[in-house]
Each structure stands twice: as C-alpha cells, then as structure tokens.
Amino acid sequence: MRIILIGPPGAGKGTQSQHLAQSLGISHISTGEVLRQEVAANTTLGQSAQRFISHGRLVPDEIIFEIIEHRLNQPDCTGGFLLDGFPRTLDQAKQLHIFLEKHGLQLDGAIELQVESAELLRRLSARKRADDQLEIIHERIATYHRVTEPMLDYYLGMNYLQTINGMGTMDTVFERLCAAVNSLPKRRSSSVAYAK
Ligand code: AMP
Image (cartoon, rainbow, N blue to C red; front, side, top):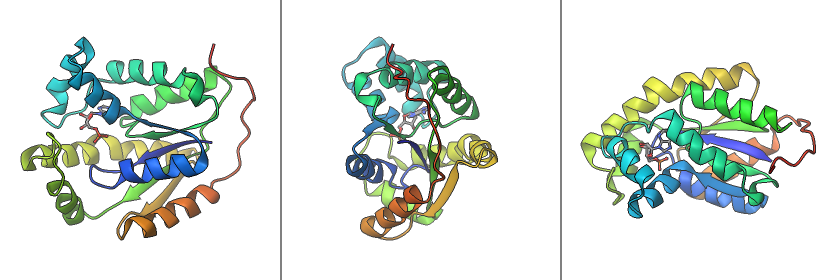
C-alpha cells in the first residue's frame, strides 16, 4: 500500500505512522526524521534545512523532493510505504503524483488526523524537541493552516482523502486509523517495479 498521513504538528503522526507501517509491513518514511538526521550529521543539506526548521518554517520543496525521490527509489519501498510529514505543500503533492505516475503507481489514500489546537499545544509542550519551544510551535501550527491545509482539497478532489478524529488515546486513534485504511477504495497500480 502507498499511504500518506497528514496532520498538524503534535497530531501524533510519527507514533501512529510507525505503528501502522509496521502492522501493514510497509516502509515508514518521515521527512522530519530524515532532516533531523542530516542536521545531527551536520551535512550540507542539514545545514541548509536547519535554518528553516529552527524557525518553524517549511524546508524548501526542492530539498524535500530530493530527499523523498532518493528514499522512494530504495528497494524497501517497492512493497509500499507510509509517508509521514510529506507532502506538506500543494507543489510537493503534485511532484509526488508525477513521480508515482512515472513509475506506473498511485497512492491508495491520504489520511488526515484532526486534533484540536489546545490539545496540539498540550502535546507539543510536553515534548523535548529543539523545535518544540512555544514560539516555534505557534509558527509550525500557523504554517500548517496556511500552507498544508489547502493541499487537502487536492486529495479530496481526487477522492483520496479520509479524515479521522485524532483526539483520544493512542490505541483509540490507531483503531480509527486502521478502519480508515480498510475503507480506502481499492485502486489498481501497475505491477512495474519502480526502482530503476
Ligand atoms: P516533523 O518532524 O514532520 O514535524 O518535521 C519537522 C520540521 O522539518 C518541520 O517543521 C519542517 O521545518 C521540516 N519538514 C519536515 N517535512 C517537511 C516537508 N515535507 N516540507 C517542508 N519541510 C518539512
């Protein structure tokens, strides 16, 4: 399966994605995680990305797509993948679509996790990540509403979008997530392997 998980910072995408990818036997790809590794390793890419991450802004699409294209071409992705934190802009969504089409593939669905703002703030304030300081949290949430939410219409228009309630315990949300995955319309993808 090829699924994307969309939601504001603090919606639980990371935890739920890991869990879901494992239960579906597909690769979990988090662009935020890849970026944090690049930052920690102090690579050129990490240095460029850090300037945006530390202000709660989105890293430019070109950098993100380079990461994603490289990652999706790895052999472990041929069996399917769960994208966590990508796409986050309409352009990224369109680029992903072009990439998949080029390889005769399509998404199975896009799942949106909805969580109330007060709960997002509560969850993010309890974490210890460098970009989880209050000012940066506000910027990241605002960026989500301004830039990422409009992308939802793109997936809605293609009948890919399922929205679920992300409030509640991890187990409750996971049950809803599994139900949403099971109710995704069955789509046909060509069997062409896309690595090379
Ligand atoms: P996350 O771990 O998904 O919350 O991502 C942490 C930070 O990495 C975000 O606040 C952005 O600065 C950056 N980032 C992650 N994914 C993307 C993406 N698809 N597009 C742009 N920036 C991203």
